[in-house]
Image 1 (cartoon, rainbow over the protein chains, first blue to last red):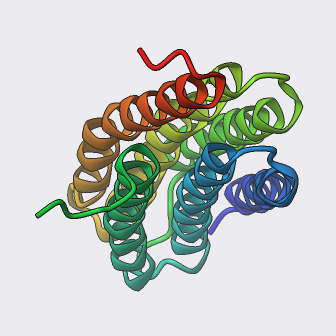
Image 2: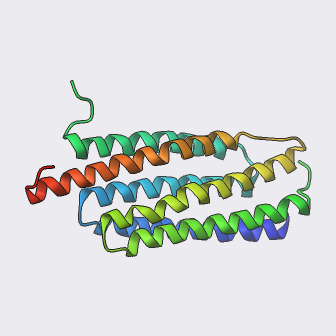
Image 3: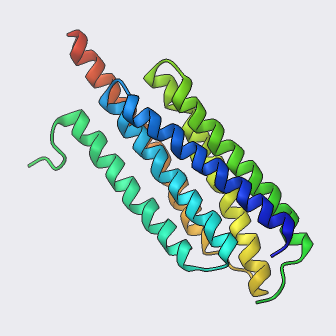
Length: 93
Length: 107
């Protein structure tokens, strides 16, 4: 692991943490429900990027699987929440 | 594990810095813009182009460490690029529906 790459990974980690902080503020402040859903969407995508940066830093492939799982379940969660906001129920009979 | 050469570390570092800046800028736009439909735009930049940059850096580093092409990260790239428009469209439809219902116009 070269020093340059290590510094870049630390910088990227700080940027993703800052993005998570901004999304958390929007999650608590958001005036409407769709703002909160959008903030959750941003939070899961930034958490996925944070795990990928950790995977580069520690040279492990377990972080990759976690990032893939977060991408899958985050998509399902956002779609079901948006469907709930649109219809009032997730799975229609 | 082999040492990572500079020809792989330098582009990976540049891509990581670019991805981090894009993600932080997108979240700042989510925090600062005044309207929901405006607030939908900036995070898409971070979650498509930023994720693409970070995944490309991850592919470069793991390929250089393993000594052979490792393209696992293409799965996440493909999935993110496929699903980002779906969530954006559903959220925009939900926001428009709720706004119309609240003001009583109803379509």
